[in-house]
Length: 391
Ligand code: ADP
Ligand code: MG
Image (cartoon, rainbow, N blue to C red; front, top):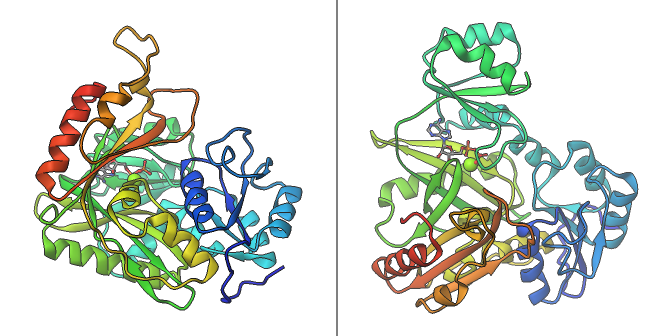
């Protein structure tokens, strides 16, 4: 077993990933392309990443035997899912190289800790309060946090575990409706738009980043990400990159990190949350850049050099959610892939999920071209062919 070290792990070695969803699948595809073998720990048989790997540890994330098997099989382990129990990560870290480190993941698992870190580092975030009992609800109710969004501190994703609270008098009931777990209440900000920064930091502290992408969410789920000159004012983009780099440094982070930001109507940059792994908003890098976020993930893990990625195309990514597999009557159908693939610069990525469900991320579709106007035109045409609401 290798202790957390910095020596280069050469192709041919086995790399481990905790979690078998689409992020693990795209990590595996990229690492396999460079000659690594991948072992995935994922409870579900046939999960997107498990379909592609010859080695699958089918156990729960905190199963001792499963973790032992990972530590024995893999030279280094990463995550595609941040809600792996902290104790499991701590155990793994003692037995095999793990990137990102367990303490950094622990911060990203908890919105309250994330916000505390942002504040500690001087990165602006939304006015907020942590609520965990009736007394803290009463205390938060006296503050100017309404209308607010109450979010479970842990385990939320794609807008799940969130509820809008219009007035102070509704806070305690809303908190109870979310299960009475630790929550963060934050003021609902008047947003101009959203953006995110994906960066990678090696064990030696060297950092590279992708330029920020502009993100559109619908119903709390990412709808599109766009990257092209002029999409984000340069000054804001620079501030976001600087803040994200500061967060990575503050966590002594190793691996790929995404920080999501809001830009308010009055032009302020506000940190929202972060993910200790490649991010949905960075999927376009598979097609728009000379190294994708998944390549940077395994490069960090194996201790390979981290060249600054170069974006060679404008790009627009659309998420493909389960809704697309149903017609207006609710009958299942196959989306018009041939029609979409006929569009210039189309790159289709499907995750091998067999059961479409509303809100389930089934795949994504990226468009690349020389200009923003071209990717937007192709994406608009795709929306029409797929029956997606337009950009
Ligand atoms: P998730 O973990 O589900 O991605 P987020 O906190 O990122 O949770 O919230 C999802 C989306 O909801 C955001 O991308 C944004 O569109 C909207 N949102 C969240 N918090 C706020 C806020 N304080 N003000 C305005 N919009 C918000
Ligand atoms: Mg988010």
